[in-house]
Length: 635
Image (cartoon, rainbow, N blue to C red):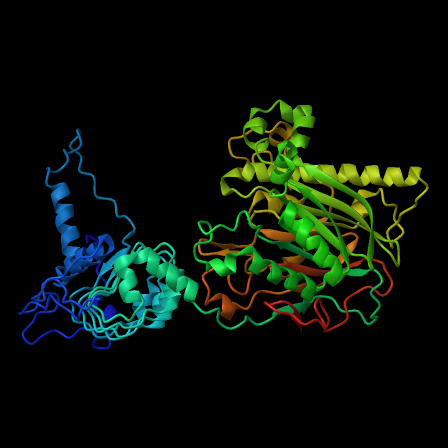
């Protein structure tokens, strides 16, 4: 291969390599291995077995051709030797001329970059555990050996694109192979496999599933010939059992109070629901169609919201029709919630029937706990147009103006104490290549929150209303207003957005701005006066808030003003053992590719605020689909 060879002592341990009598290790055996295997999937002998197949269609032809190619690669290290021969051919044009000054330049050592390993044709019986430490491998040839079992640890080779275990003695396929969602080729030719596990339905990128030469049971035997790999994978995915429910997420107590009164305490949920329009089979090809269907997912979403029973609920990716026809009515009837909703800015130019399919942000609150004082929609497109200093920047038109993200802002008043809390429910642009836009949107968000807070306080004074926080500070003192900013920020903890929100400033030359210019934002940098902190910073954030086969990270947050609010508890991670067995969300148990965040808070200075030990959202509620929480103390 032109790359370092792994030692036989390391990879062929446990007497996995058994040379024939008189054979030199690493050299072809004295007699060629058989070129035929067990009967093919259609019950006829494979090519080269003394019979002829009747090809019934293009998918059958592809199986037969690939199986024939596999049988012709039975000699030791066949693929490595072919690659080496090809490399020599490329170099046969002659050596490059020496430098003009005739000075000999020693070759520079480069780090190893090999990703392909050929252990084919070595008559191995077992695989050493150390093999599965090489998670960087993209291609692994284990073909034409004497392997009887593939261990579950094969799933550790998560970078695999090609896996060839043809011509062995396998009678079963480990379900864990379904975790290798990057596989394009899985060659199982000429083994003794009768049952294909349904977990292989998760291999949504698989282009070739080689089953020729196995006594495969129906309906897979006929399906691979008639419908090919795609048909088989789709069938397996649809038939794959849901599996056991995940353990309930732990409720982590961060702050305890001897006084159980909660007059100025509340809980808030933040949840990107994955709207129906975006939940396409193309985008979520690893999810069974029935689990991706809105009629199935909406009930799980509702169960989550009702089970956690948060006082305030911030939802993103809610279509207008879903808000009007489902969430508004169901949450009113089942949780006594009221809510407001705004769609994204594109809806301004659409007819009514088109607008109903546009997603936006919805904020709900329990009527018995809060009353609505003010509401407002922040449209980042409109703000950019209204500001002369931004309109002058060409990049604003080319990058910011073409994104129609919004934030819904509400000012809620606790009915019992009349303390007020400003809630911003935001959804920033998704594309990782638009980090600059996300930073600009965040800057505009905080500027608008400052403007709204000041305006609402002034309006209330003019009308004779005198809102104050429970600490006695005037509501127009923005640093003292209880402020929560929750939502999907599509930004990791190492991003400029996170740095700006948590630290209060970002330099004008921050890498996330790139080469783009945004007026004073990139000439002076960004600053804000809100003392903000992520509610999950006590845990160094969750393991993830978004989980798919190609991405797993934290992009959703609940930010709060530390001067006026304290966090008393948070909903913990999704069960890690469960996560290790699934390829991504949504699935049968999780209705969105995001997970909900739930945070318990108290307004500082309030008498009796806090969350009693051992309680949290969902206490006393029956939960399905993973809702509810069990309490633990954070240490």
